[in-house]
Length: 295
Image (cartoon, rainbow, N blue to C red):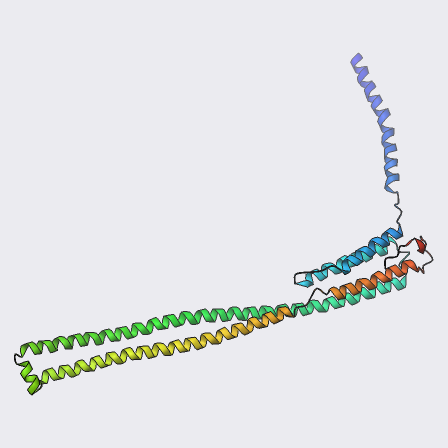
């Protein structure tokens, strides 16, 4: 019985002590949640002007610059939107119009540069493709030339081999005739043997054909080499011309539009700073003397 009374006592204590504390804590959280933080127009303006100045001097090193332009425009737009949201009492119709006009102008200028960069990139891609095509043609030309030279040599070698076989056969036949005739030397000085004479004539003819074949081979090889050299030189000249166009295109590539971006940011900077120094809105929460001079 004693244990039951202690348990009931704990439950009653717990319920009495904790419920009120949760209500108080909830009211404190609600009060702190709805607490409004006061905005200092001078600090907001100083932060915005510094950010605008930083964006106006931001450099982009590597192309394509179009990707940097999009990000840069978004960053600038976010800064100006936060400025108008944080201290709307400062942004009168004239300032809003001037900011919007400068944003439209720089957006249009960067869009033109983006289009020019896109056209240039497409042209560069076409030139690189043409260079690659010429390289393939050059490789194919060299491969075809080597194979053709091998075929020509093989063709002449087969023909010469046949002539050499005929020459060897005629030479052996001639020697056989000479061995059969014991008085060959006497016959040679007095009267040529008909068989020997015919064999000698045929032998000379085959040897002459062999010499002509060798000369014809050299002439054919020289002609093929000249044709290959001329075609190769033509392709090399074309490749060099395309590479020169690529270099010229790269040298004339658009820059990061620093001057255009800097000019736009300077105009926006002066417009915001001028509006702070010479406010025209009656609802301004802070006097113009509190705004620092950032020019």
